[in-house]
Length: 134
Length: 372
Image (cartoon, rainbow over all chains, first blue to last red; front, side, top):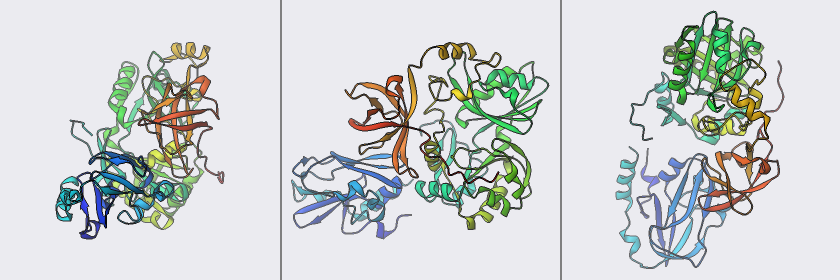
């Protein structure tokens, strides 16, 4: 089911199926293709943080809903929210269309620059997904 | 999901697997929740046609000289008014007037009735009808030998015509007859649970795959798609058709659930008649209403409904996005004074109070282009 392309090699991952991308001083966060496949048609993304908020690792920063179900969104690392993807409020379908790109959710200034490297890499996440798919 | 019992499979399970259906546990069965996606399947049913496996439903057969009386005593509708080949949506209540199950009853003839109950209530209703039949008529639970396929949507009868059974379009709504489809003996009824025109087709358990493949074979070119339980739920919600276990159950009675039209209070005695007649004498305390979300949020089954001062006043029984109506919609019980169309209230979406408003139902009504 899952192909290599659906777990980009340059990202880091959580067991709850968020991804984290380091770009310069910030870390952008979204959800993985596996999470999107489980959700189905995404109908609502609710980001419950504002720019300037400080989130702890593992803390809920929003919820994502599909026709049938709802999931919490967890911050992969601790940090300060520096940007929020406002487009998702009116275009939740971006999550189905481009979960690793246009559907990024929040950008964090990490509290600890090394925190991202403690998350799963693509290989470990690929294994995690295989286990979760059973 | 945590059911300890072994899950059962319908005879169409291999078809679902082959079609890539995502299988979930539902009412003790392994059933497809979706194939291509809930919204895609929903739209196929509204614009063309959809094919549903609903073989998990229960089929109870009552036969004999007093079968009509037994059925009439167990349900709220006046089944004595039905003619041969006619069906009726109704419900069975307990002595308190609350709902044991909602049903469709089919009169083959005065001495032969089919009662179709929800899959989740099959054991309960089977025991209930069996008990009432004792010493009065013959009872048989045919659920294990009967498959049920629903073909729904504006092109449902074109699909049947492509199978050589175009004459079924002469069936009137809530009527049924025997028909051989793709060589399979069926009882085909013009009923459904989607708000669209279409049929529900009963056939022998083992023959369902033949019929299923034949329908998809001729129907795919017309836009027919297999549809899972996910879209079945969004379709029925837009049409404001009740879901047992969500909108109605043994704590609700048909009058507050907006099902007064299926209760024949004036007919002779039936189980729950006394309670329902008493309830009908006073104004209703609460009503099941349809609502639309005004703020950003999706109501879900079990969410609290709150009044303007944020007091808990009711509960959401069904809620989801409505793919055709393009809004987030729901059903819920509200106090009568808050049940009028246009009344604003709040839905507690996991701690966030989101604005909603009572609206007229059904949320969706199919365009009238019938040629009956």
